[in-house]
Amino acid sequence: MDPVPGTPFGVVHLDVPAVTSGPAVGSLVAGIGSIVVSLVVICFGVAGARLGGAWAAGAFTVPGVLAGAAAIVAGLLGRRQIRRVAPPPAVRFTGRGLAVAGISCGAAGFLLSLSGLGLALLLQFA
Image (cartoon, rainbow, N blue to C red; front, side):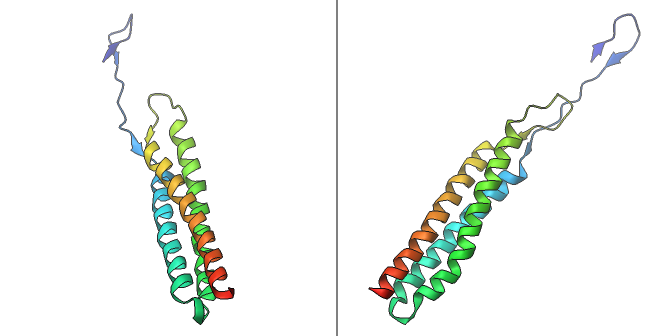
């Protein structure tokens, strides 16, 4: 408590605990989901190469790419939210590592999905 000069009153500053950023958590979840879907794309492309596995791989590539892109965007938004400076009574956000991991996983899932589709097409038409 800080006394207010010239008065019998005081000012109390309440400490607001930090909160984990929601977009950072969502980014990590979407990035991991993108990697899981990209592994499904690769499995369908390699295992079903002679049975038209490229069609199934192509169908799973779309959600893999979309989840990877969403993870990248949400991670960037989370990093911006965490980096923003707020005055003391406002809520502070944490989770920079979650946001960076989400961006990394999203980019890996995005690229693995596209390369899995390319592998499936190469095996089917070769």
